[in-house]
Image 1 (cartoon, rainbow, N blue to C red):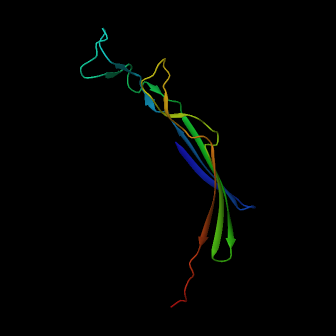
Image 2: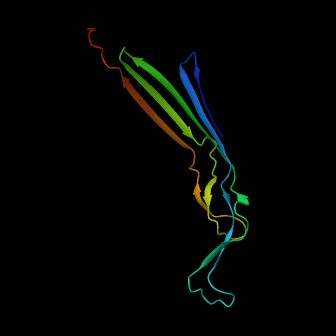
Image 3: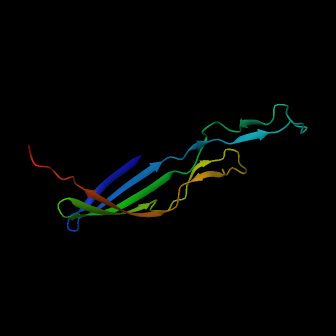
Length: 136
């Protein structure tokens, strides 16, 4: 589920915007790799992998991510506008795995990809309106 919205604070002309995303964790199942038979004789075709439990029987933790933006625009004359922005990504600084190794020990999957840490970004946008020529 993804929710987004914005609100302009009237007296100061600042816009607050946010995006909240909640996503169930990726399904996975453990699997086993066999390199040889019970007498430790290697298989001719190489190692064999097979599922140790039904596919999708486990899930990684649910992802909950909130991103926010504050912005303010300034009119500079009739033709120019400057917008200043500040973004905060992953506000709650969640460190959740997106993907995990399916072959693991002791029931704990090894993370392959983790949600990035909290990050700040500052930016500016300059807009200039084109001049209109005389009406013909």
